[in-house]
Image: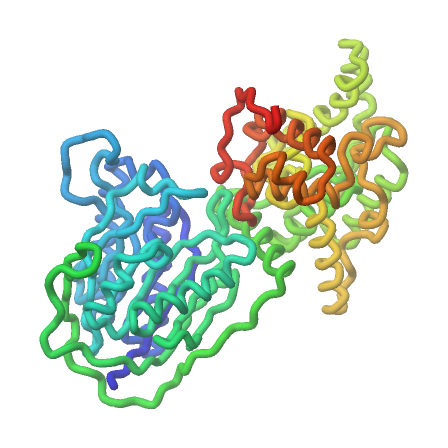
Length: 584
């Protein structure tokens, strides 16, 4: 059987950074060539970054993407890599059509191309366009209508893009009909908790359906609220995993494959789902037999909590660095949320680039002050104390506020202080709110919600504790000092709005609250369904009303890393003005 050394480049590129992305692709292709690759692939829209959102509707950006692709093909040939086929995702456009409702102007396409000998040998567009969750691809793209197949070293390789594997029909059965020896799918599938298991079973199933070895190339890194976890796969026709890349890491997954030879007569015609086979022969003759150097293998898998933690670190690092910041600042209250956010930031950016500010008020307990200082000592982050009592007193003297207005004033003074330090010193402000608080509106607008990024926005409070304990345990396993003080983990959570105040004065116990929220927010279950699972009816009504009433607050919260199937933001879109209440 013909042999083929496949190089899957699991990389992180930046949206809109066409020159930088081009250099990254050149560097990576050069490295693969030096290791003897016969076919090199990069992820979905690697040249432009992903997702491009409304940039897809801007003709100037589409033109720039197409030009960058042609430039990349030429530079590969100039560097002596022209005979190495390179598959890369980019933004293209189809045949211009008159504008009409329900179709994006300019016919933009989520596309990929095969570059060979200094030219674009083949272009194709994603066939299945996702339109659920964070995806709006019907808004941005027109679908492809071909089954692209390239013959490389005597092997027919069918090509697909992401959703082409996730949806039934289309290019998967078409690859079988065309007799492909390998199916290669380029992906930029965002991370969700437990998605790696779903992905593995999907690729196994599609390999069996296609009747050929299937390579699933994934992206890594982060873009705004999304993170990409890598986890690229190569699966045999019988579902066996031949190779699996690491999670949350850039790497070149190389694997030597034995694959069936292409038919003497290249496939042609129209196949499943009306797809027209677009076949291009790049190299018809098989390679002389060679001893395999890269037999495959599976990288170690991360335990569940380590995987989530890695996603959060990736999200912070990507958002901060890709937006041109070198450092972050956040308030250190001595509580669990700010402790976890600070630890994540230290792991993402290095402790020297993390600035923690304790802002004690008249209601701040002594243990809160000492816990904040102890966290700073353990992590090594930059730490300062800015007492806010005089500022709060000045406001109160001018406005004579009482009750909730006075309680919220502390938080708003802290927010103003952090933003002032950001303006003065150039740090990006991190907001420490968690998903439980955001769900119930347990936050102060223009106070603790101040910030450019919310690292634990999609993490329920009970998960915050679990992640903090796990991070401490990992430190112990490595012989290091646990970053989060034990007292922070064990004391009752409190916003310290008044003497003796606890979160449970306002919210149900988090262990119960989070289970209700998971059903309502993530699962879209109604009151009756939740009560039927054994929860108290009055409690359910109370929680659901808090969630519904807080939509206006969530709209004003900064973006944050998505780790669940339904995070606040693009995943969950409810009207702010909304009189519907579960159960009347």
